[in-house]
Structure formats: structure tokens, C-alpha cells
Amino acid sequence: MQLADALYSQGFGTRRYCRALIESGRVALHGRGPAPHTVREPGQEVDEEGLVLRVEGQDWPFQRKAYLMLHKPAGTECSQRPRAHPSIYSLLPAPLRQRPVRGGTPGVQAAGRLDQDTTGLLLLSDDGQFLHRMSSPRHHVPKRYRVWTRHPVDTRQTDALRAGVVLDDDPGPVAAAACEALAERVLDLTLTQGKYHQVKRMLAAVGNRVERLHRVQIGALALPDDLAPGQWRWLDAEQLRLAGTAALP
Image (cartoon, rainbow, N blue to C red):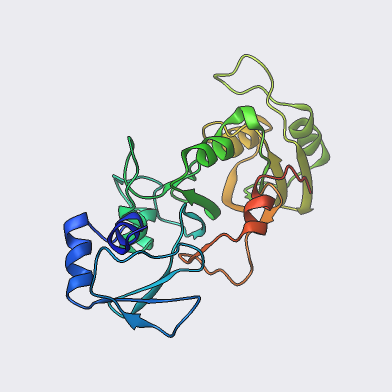
């Protein structure tokens, strides 16, 4: 792969702009091999394996496909065109928002959505197959939530959530894959369907109300304790495997 193509594929701008970055001496290479060194030839061949681009002083590991996690903070929308709150995409660096995607919207996209007041683990990628697998109800990827409720939770409610409740626009009952009361007003709830406002509607169906909602796990991948609200990081191979593993609490 030529250096200009590698830079373009990572979202650093148009092909013309990437060539200009290289020719002006603002791109260096490091990773495997020699120490970081500036390259001014856009057509130089580069090895993708272990490649790290240093663009205007900032290191960027080459990723053929982007897979990342974000700790979504409250008061943000999972939309490219937010209506009332900042977009989660504003929390990401420009290259991730600009990665070229053939036949689709540029940049990484969220695998499903969380409401503006919901916090916690969110996965993003520019891999369409991965996004579909993680968000489609047909694949039944479990998602675990911590739920704080307005009223005390009793066994009648937890039993009903596990057995299945009827929502106003669904013909059949919708059941939690797992449900456990952690405190008087705190639930651990695992779902596999991913319906619109599902947690809030299920709690309403058993006579309670969600006061706060936080997603703690997708598949067998838990939100790291050291990832603060608003922060993101790349998924490594093991984390990517865990995200697609159907592990229940």
C-alpha cells in the first residue's frame, strides 16, 4: 500500500490533502523497523502490519477496520445530526469521523443506540457486518444494564421481567434473559432483543419507572473501570471476541 493511500484510509482527509501532508513533511513512520522518520514521498510503499503513522506530531496506529468502545456520558445523542444534545461523535478524533466507507456514511458508526440520558458501553466501527451482527435482534447478543428505579423492586416484578411482559406495540411477551435485584431500587437486567426504549417500557409494564440507566456489558465484554465517561479506546482482538460472545451474568 502506498503511504498516501494508507493515510487516506485512516480518515486524515481527501487524497489530495493526504498527499500535501506527506509532501510538506508532516507525516513520519514508525512501528516495526527503524526509529520514526519523516517521509515526503506519497507513493512510498508501506507495510500495514505494525504500522504507526505520526501525523503532525500525533501517533496513529494503522487499523484496516476500526473497532472501538466508548463510555457514553449522559446528555449525548447517538446521532450524526443531534437535535438537543451534543453528538457522541463529537467525542471522537477527526480521523475516526472521516474514515472513508464505500457506499455508506463516512466514519465509524455506533452499533445500536442509547438514549441521551443513558450512559455506559457503546461499540463503534466502520465494519458493516460487525455493526449488523452486534445490533440486529436476530443475533441475540446479550446486553447487560444497571437500572436504578423510582420505586422499590420486589420479587413479583423480577419474576414478571424474567417470564415476559407485554409492551404496548408488541403482540407477544418480551422477557429479560436475566434479572437480579441488587438493592431495593437497583436491578441488573440483561436483554437480547434491543427494542426501542425496551428497558424503560419493561419496567413501566411491571409498575415501576427507570430513574437512571447504565449499560455495563455487551456479550462478555464489560465496560472497563478505567474508561471514564466520554473516553474511547481501540478494541483489541480479545475484546472483539468477547463482544460477540453470548455470555450471561
